[in-house]
Amino acid sequence: MARKQIAVMSTLKHIKPIGTILLFALLLGACRPMYGETSMGYQTVSELSAIEVNELPGRVGQKIRNELIFLFTGGKQASQPKYKLEIAYRESVLGVLFKRTDDAAGQIYSLDATFTLRDISGKTELTKGRSHARAAFDKHKSTYSNIRAERDAKNRAAKDIAKDINTRIAAYISSNR
Image (cartoon, rainbow, N blue to C red; front, side, top):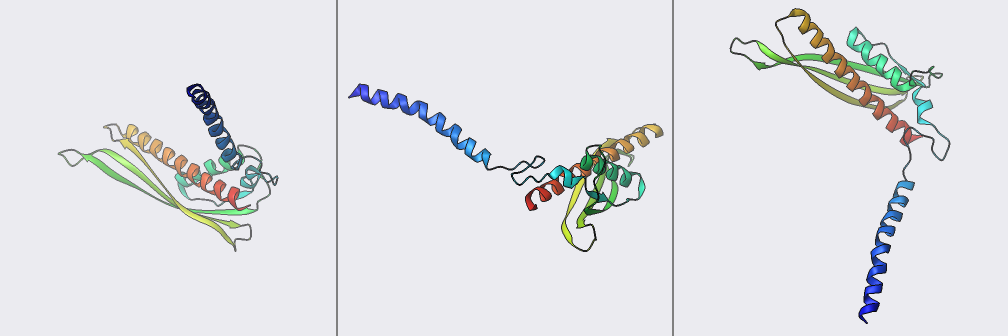
């Protein structure tokens, strides 16, 4: 009797991991790739390259727009536009780490953006959202260092905003087509 129980226990030890592996394989099989081709042959990447991004004012706006165009196209030629992406942004700088002389030793650059994806006619709103980015930088005695540090913070924030908007739109397109 004891040998039979040991044999059954030994068999169960091997079946449990195999069952777990099969369960994970079944769950992963139900997933759809966001950037790959789905079972219907639809490609999110080609749809992303068909997004026209509106002109944005200022250096930060141009940085956001250029980053988005690169993320949408992968550096390749853009497709014939099917969608319009409208973006508006607001920026501010907040002083932190104040000294006794009321000078800020550090600052935080804040960038807030709202976006709306529409069809090419501009009449139908497909999705919209908000994105936020913060980038800290130090304030130095040198004027050039301050300008450069703030510019770097703006570049980092603009890149973060573009990545966030790209991910949200890719998720929308992947799940709704």
